[in-house]
Image 1 (cartoon, rainbow, N blue to C red):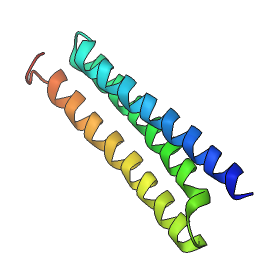
Image 2: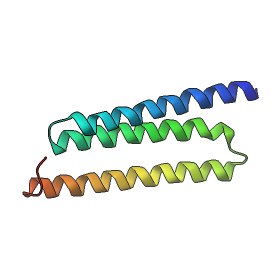
Image 3: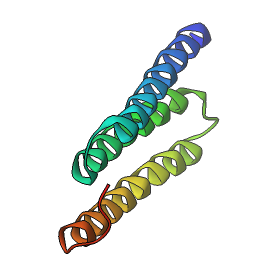
Image 4: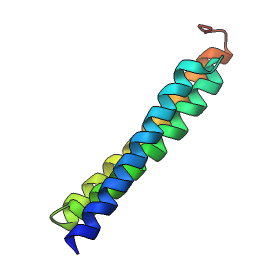
Length: 97
C-alpha cells in the first residue's frame, strides 16, 4: 500500500510542477498584464492543489494534512485578492507591460 501512495505522490507532484512551469511560461510569454495574471493565478493554484493532494498521503496525521489544506486555501484567497488589486491598478492607468 505504501508503494501505491508513493506513486500517487510522485504523479501528483510532477503534475503540479508542470502547471507551475506552464504558469511561468504564460507569465513570460503573454502580451499584456491581464492575460499574464490569468495564466499565473490559474496555473499556480492548480499546481499547488496538485502538490498538496500528492503530499496528503505522506502526512503522519490528520492534523498535518489539514494544515496543508489550510495553507492551500490561504494561498487561493491571497492570489485572488492580489490579482484583483493588480488588475484594478492596471485598469486605472497603472504600469503597462
